[in-house]
Image (tube, rainbow, N blue to C red; front, side):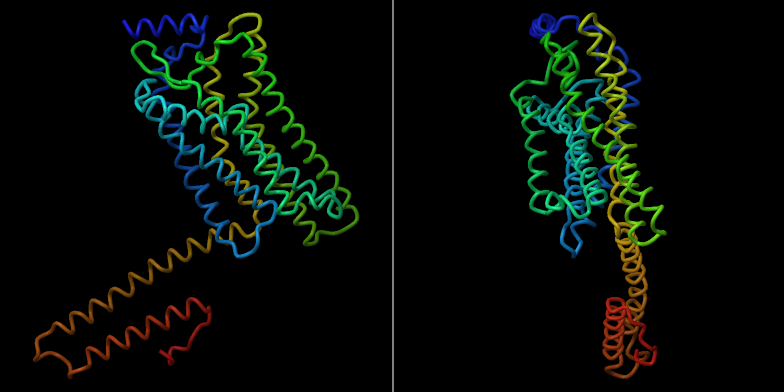
Length: 382
């Protein structure tokens, strides 16, 4: 009876919700969505964690670009934390097992990097503007690229997104339907007749405006590069300029590939919803495509940070060296132990085992010193 009452209440509060029935295509969703989001989770967790580790290991001071990139990686990491709950939700056939509080927190993290208040879009726009100021106005407006101003801009982006998604904490995202508890489904947001207008406004602010800004920055930088190419040959500065152009091009491609399908779909969906009730199955497909952006952001870091590739390769080389050195060092250690454990009749003179150990330790110290200093010592010194 309780479930029936809740279902009837939700039907009264959310009329015409059958068009967004979550259970219509669940057979395909319970297979495809867990696989897709598991791949996104693995790639995003590994890629963004590596980026944060490499950037935080830098000895140089942070510049404007690196600060924006750190915040972009943090936003992707927060979004990644919401994926395990969504994966389990789809595996359980759209049944949320973790309660209302975790549903609200997951919705908060998911929405922060997905819908109107999109952190990734905000920081992508900031990176594009930063590259535009560095390229087109290298001697003007550089105060806007100072570390103090950039930190304030980042705080402003986080504050604006937090204000947009904070009301979700005070509204239950959990609803009973067909003996299941759904979390963050579309019919939960159809209770107001003003919803289509609000979503259209949100899409215009959070998608159309950043897209125009990014395209404008890319066009201006291209014009600047063409003008510089006519005057100068390929120099170190022109290579830096082309790298900046590549960064914005990657941001633009990621923006169009991941965010455009969903926002265009939402705008046409809400435009038709004002007059009649359209189907909304395609919304989840475009949402999944939009969530893939957290896997593409590490590619932007690869080109945005000049020494990122070298740092990543050095990390792998250090790991391979230490693992190889440890395996080589264990063999002489075992042979020394076997020698010291031989019968007294077969042992070498007293103290030779200890001398071998001291010699082995000195070799280890010299190997570590040679690796850290980078000098190749002569074999006679060992």
